[in-house]
Length: 369
Image 1 (cartoon, one colour):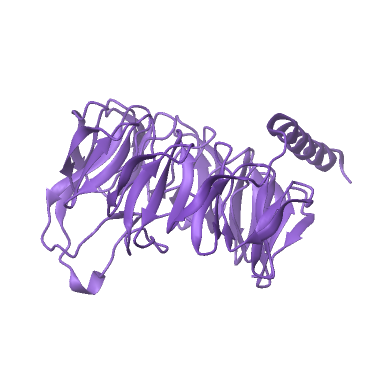
Image 2 (spheres, rainbow, N blue to C red; image 1 turned 135 degrees about the vertical axis):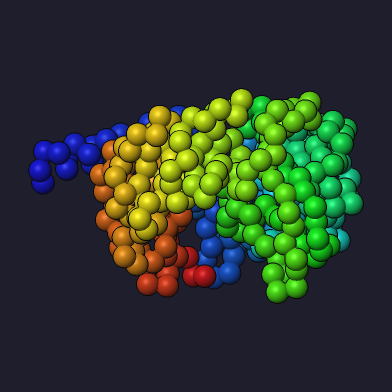
């Protein structure tokens, strides 16, 4: 093994060791024979596999399904909020979205009424909304009669529902969309990346064959509901690390929180900034830039993801692997699919089989489903 390769391996192992020491007992949801429970980073079962479904821990609690109802457990596997909901999402800022009279399916719009609870299980906002987003910077987007506004942590409406679409607050800014809706069957929706993860949002369309698309623009408001960046963009994203991706004249760049151009629009597509880097697409290949727009990792990947914990997933040909923030391949592309690095373990799909592996490539757990 060469010195540089050995050094990179040492850094990976050091990262995992520090992460483990800092976070104590990190638990990961796993499945075997149709039942779910939790393991630690070494693959030891810490919470018995007895649930119909199980979500990752966040803010000390995890949503689990048993007897067709969802509740929340602590890291000892004890119920802190008894199963009573048709569906739940993870806690954010001490609040969790809960569903009654239906569930969101994989899209968030297919049924049920959404409300919010606190970590004691107290209902803060009774289930009543067809759509709502998680809390961020003390505010959560809710939809009333097809219009979006924001409530505070006590459920009080702070920004009156008035926008066709709202994002989540970041860096004291929230994305809004205003315009003329030509057909009531048209929706813009915030989609969960996977069944449980709430990492990054994307806009998707429903009933495309039946709708007339709306006319409008994206802009941004502050936490008082005042428009601080006028709606002017065909496409835009939430702020992340102080910058937001926008489309100007068919190219993507980034603006700061005052609407000033931070990175000149020049890319075919971009992602949000994470760990100081953002992915970009030019000439059908992806690379990474920094906040000054300088290319840090040259375009070379067929697809790629955002950086998390110093690593990003990349695709070359039909296979996925991982790179570090220097662009060095840490896990060579060999898997059918990989999810983002999450606290030291990666969920991958290899030859139709889902597994957890470590950042060194060691198999930790194999799922039946």
